[in-house]
Every structure is written in structure tokens, then in C-alpha cells.
Length: 88
Image 1 (cartoon, rainbow, N blue to C red):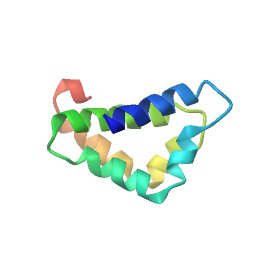
Image 2: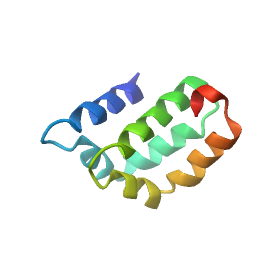
Image 3: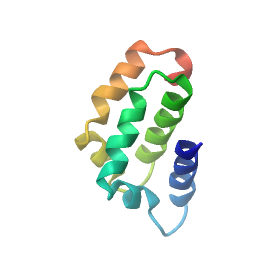
């Protein structure tokens, strides 16, 4: 549930003057822990974490670049290649 809440905050925040994506990404543990959720065997957690990554990349902030620099692309590529359709 926490991952979904963060994802909703990022999505809703992109509509206003605040930038929750940049705020979250300014805390180093946020990205590393979010990426670690993508590597878990728990399908529900992985699905929410991919949704969070999707919402982060859709913001007008520097979040997409921070995700690239943080190593999200190889992890997300593996999910795209090897996971079931609902995680893609």
C-alpha cells in the first residue's frame, strides 16, 4: 500500500506547483529502495513499483534523468523482457 500511496502522490503532485517526485528522489534511500522493490519475487509489490517508476518518469521534473542515472533502465528492461504482461 505504501508504494501505491507514493505513486499517487507523485501523479497528483505533477498537476500542482509542488514537485513531489524531486522531493522523494532527493532522499538517496528512496530510489535505491524503490528499485529493490522491482527485484522482489512478490508480484504485487513489483507491479506497484513499476507503476511508481512510470509515474516518476511522467513528471516534468528531472526524475526521468535521476532514474536513468540511478540504474532503473536495466532493471525495468529485465521486467519488460521476462515478466508477465500485467507487469509490462
